Structure formats: structure tokens, C-alpha cells
Image (tube, rainbow, N blue to C red; front, top):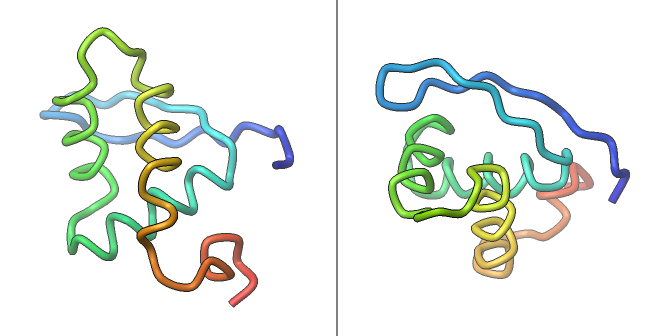
Length: 81
């Protein structure tokens, strides 16, 4: 991982918020949203709804770690495909 955070704005349940994650996590979230046929904001809203007391950024990282192996073409996640 590069360690550099990339900040993005997302709309969660009608409220704008920003989230800073490493590009590798964004790649997994983007791929997961595309695979599920939902927007990135829609996917993050699902993660938000299920995160409990965990901070949103942490919940997104955990989601990415749990779901990266389920997504096709690992090279596509890093931009190598």
C-alpha cells in the first residue's frame, strides 16, 4: 500500500460526508459496487448501516478486506488489468 489517503465525498442517506481511505481500499469498494450494480454511495450506505460502533473508515476497510478475494481479476483492483 502506498499509505497515501485519498479523500472522497459521498452522500449517505441524504447527507454529504467525506471519507479518507488508501487508494487500494477505494479500488476494492469501487469494484464491489460495480459487481453489485450499485453506486459507491449506495454500497457505503450499506456498510454504514451495518457498522455498529465501528468508525465508518474502519468499517469500509474491513469490508474491503473481507470482499477483495470474492471479486474477479485481482489485477483490476490495483489498476493493472
